[in-house]
Length: 548
Image (cartoon, rainbow, N blue to C red):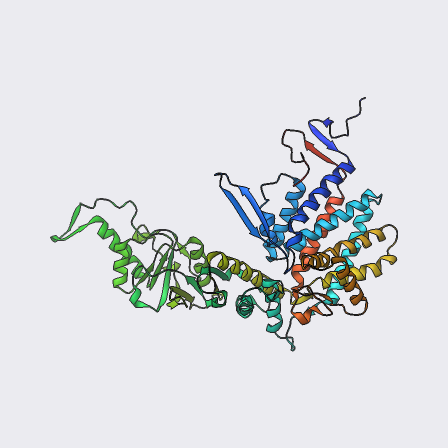
């Protein structure tokens, strides 16, 4: 019987088959190329990547960023390489859970997978490599537990705001002292997270914090606003601010459906002294139904018919129209109100959908006015809005992204109130411990533990290189300092090696770091188990070219 072909040129039932060496090459190439996408962006001295691609409408779009997940997501749907796509999904899972740590996760995964496949190529069994990597990962987590610091206050009853401020700054600036005026935003970032956290459970719901990028002024003019923020002028009823009472949120228009018959007249039973258009009666009916709910304000994502708004305004009811759907949803979350369906007739107005609020008009440094909406009812979770300013739209949006990074960092610190030293200190500590530990590991798994130590040192090596330092010399210096008892020695934002990065404010949430680390190890071990690839041999196969 003829044996089935085993080379890429042969096929089995329509599938092409790659052997172990070819499979390893395909996986390793993908891992290396994905790592190269973000390597130069790591750390406070990381550079930007410019991703340029042609859109479906033939327009050229360019993205310049040093945000790892932003760069990685540019390739989502653009690559049909299964390994690259899986790594993109892993990075997105890290981003979805913690909003941070994606660059480190991708880079570490790339290095671990490359190191593991190199060992396999040298004759170490994949199961042995997996065993060694698993042992090394467990030892790393133990070292990090020992080197972390508590973020609790001295009495242990609450969280230390000064330490959380350092976490926020590290998250927003990567420790850089050159990041505009972001340092002034650390306190409001901490305040925002603490307002939406539950100290008893350690849970934090950032869906109750809404950020708003608004061009105008400087980043230092940013502010934290209690409640929800509506950048709109009232459509009617401006003279009534502030107002307190029930608010009605509407997802859609406030107007009769299919208005018509403007020329038709009706008469009441007494004759023609009640002549009115059919639509006017419809408008009055809807306005009357809204007033019957006791609402002091109607905020809609669609249009509010002028006649209805005017009638409500004459009775002291504030109306605001054309508010974004996402903002309506946040208002509902922040106030406890339900979002009503479009109010096309009086019988769809629901008094149960309202919630008590206070609405006030505010002015900023640029004399722009907007509305602040605060819940006043019981048992409503506190919500806040972060108004992020910048001299231009692009600056304001970049500042908003940094603020979100700070919010996510503090959230992780509240969920698990422990921090690791940044600047590569945690990785060097783990690598030093692993090399001391490796001789006690039996068999060839010892080689895997040593390779794991080399791979994890990629983080401080890259930080040093991106800061313009002699990368190898910096890592050797850090190893020496750690061996000498300085277990927090690392690289500052300015590229200087110091004995204790905590003294320089480099606090990384342990939850973020360990989550990305575990994801990277699991990803690596799963691919080390693959000894061959079978794929459908049709034109345009995902492995044609074998690169992401």
